[in-house]
Amino acid sequence: MASSEPSYYLGIDVGTGSARAALVKADGVVVASASQDTKTWRDPTDYRIFEQSTADVWKSICGAVRQVIAQSGALPKHVKGIGFDATCSLAVTNWEGEPITVTRGAQLGEPGERNIVLWADHRAEKEADLINATGSSVLDYVGGTISVCTCPFMCQEDLALLSHYPIVTRALT
Image (spheres, helix red, strand yellow):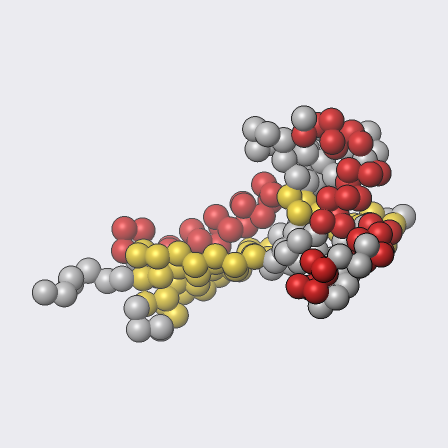
């Protein structure tokens, strides 16, 4: 016997500039959708820098989800599944999960809000070149070369943080 209670599925997508949520019925009909902007910081002296905050992204996700639940009138217990998708970026935290600042300056490596190196960030250009110069067969899995924006590996960003910002390394140990 089929349940008389409705079934909904929640889709969440985190993009470069916003977090979006949609509530969908089992037959694929979209019941409600919402979008919440996310903040991106740029360095006024370095065009390559794009940073975000895990706390801000999470706040936007929660806001969008709350909005679709409220718009739809659905009860949270009727949500039977969640699908989640996000852009590839590097979030830096310490071992306790606290955000570690990736911005140059006095706050670098300290707990703080700006802890995401966004996919569009190009501070790791030299590191991408260094990785490509290895000629490693692993590069075959990413089209033969790694670009400064290559996801999901972002090892060039890890290398940049470890090479140029040793205080971040100390914050992680």
